[in-house]
Image (cartoon, helix red, strand yellow):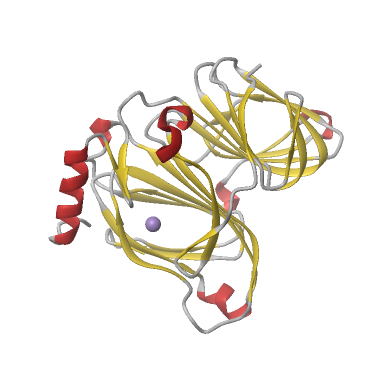
Length: 283
Ligand code: MN
C-alpha cells in the first residue's frame, strides 16, 4: 500500500484573472520531484458568481513545455487558442491542452454561465512533458462527459470516471504523452475501495466534498494527499459521501525550470521562450 507522504490543507486562495478563485494545492516550485510528472494543481473550489454581461477569466497568454488539463465540475469554461481550437465545456467535461512548443490562449467563463451566474467549481492541472516532447507541435483535446467511461465499484462503493489511463481494464479517452491516470471517484458513505496506483508512480488525491480516510489518515473537503511512490495500491475508506479526483503518473526524471507560463529544463530555454513570445514567434 502506498502511504501518505504529505497532506496539504489550509492553502490561501488567490485569483487567476478575474474569473478563477483558486488554491494552488501543489506546485513544482516547492518540490518538483515529489509531484512529477505533475507540475501544479489549481483548485477553484465552489464559488458563487452573480450574473454578468462581462467576460470573466484570463485574456490571451502563452504556455510552453507542458500540458494544461481543465476539468469542470460546475459552471462552464470557454477556450480559444492560436492553433484555431475553440470550445466551451460544462460540468463533467475536460479540456486537455498540450502546449508543447508553444500556444497562446484565452480562458473565460462560458457566455451561458456568465449570463445565469451560479456555482463555479473547477480543477486545472499542469502536466509536465519530457524534454524530447517540449518542442512538439501543440494540440488540443476536448473530452466530453459522455465520452468518459464510468466504472461501478464493487459492493456499491461508488463510481469512477476514467478520464485518462486505465482503471481495471476501462480506458480513458485522453491521449497522454507519458503513462499517467486521471480518475474522478464518487464514493458512497461507509464504503471501502482499493484504488490501483502503479509501484514507482506518484499518486495524489484531492477531496472535493465529504470526508475520506486514506491509509488511516482522515481528509476533509479541500484537502489533498501526496502519496509515496512505493506500493501499488491505495486504501480508501469513505466516511462521508465524497468526490475525489485522483492522479497517478510515472515521474519524469529531468530538471524542471519554470517561470510564469513556461516550464522547461534549463534557464536558457526559459529565456528563449520569453524571447519567442515577445517577438511573436509562439503560437
Ligand atoms: Mn492558460
